[in-house]
Amino acid sequence: KNEVEQSPQNLTAQEGEFITINCSYSVGISALHWLQQHPGGGIVSLFMLSSGKKKHGRLIATINIQEKHSSLHITASHPRDSAVYICAVPPWGGADGLTFGKGTHLIIQP
Amino acid sequence: EPEVTQTPSHQVTQMGQEVILRCVPISNHLYFYWYRQILGQKVEFLVSFYNNEISEKSEIFDDQFSVERPDGSNFTLKIRSTKLEDSAMYFCASDRGKQPQHFGDGTRLSIL
Image 1 (cartoon, rainbow over the protein chains, first blue to last red):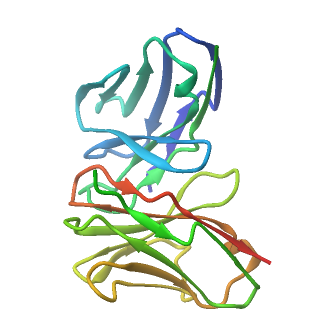
Image 2: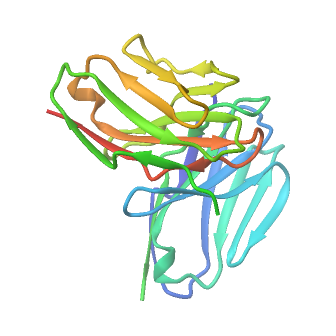
């Protein structure tokens, strides 16, 4: 069973700061998911990546498969980025239930 | 953009009662999932469903739980005899296979 660890658990930053959230996992995977959980509880998929880097707007996700590590970066952070960011991995072979990390609770202060 | 929809948004039930949580996945998706999140804890996988049968289930998904896709559009999770510890947010998700999963907004289940 894959163990997914995220750091930090909580992060408070000022608007405009560059944010980094880290995720490590214990067993090799085919892809890794980054998700955002809003204060109301809804979950949105941000990225699914299996190698290298992906960028969407101010969000960048990177993964190092050999080191079993991924990072999520937010550039020019804004209070609306405040949410819980969750890393999740499927079992090897892919299309099945995700194992979730505990999440990083991010607060961006104006 | 198509969405996964879940009903009801909040369900309050007496302990021991049966409850059915409903989901309408995105229409061209093939894989369907139920997850739960106990308050303050991480999201946990319950069950996945493909080709009209369960493809994987977790230790949490015991005999009290069942899933069904009765009519080609709805995907339901039934809890036969609810316990206090079943109180949680339940999320339905779907995907086309090896693609990002799309999540519903969840059903908050409160067992009294």
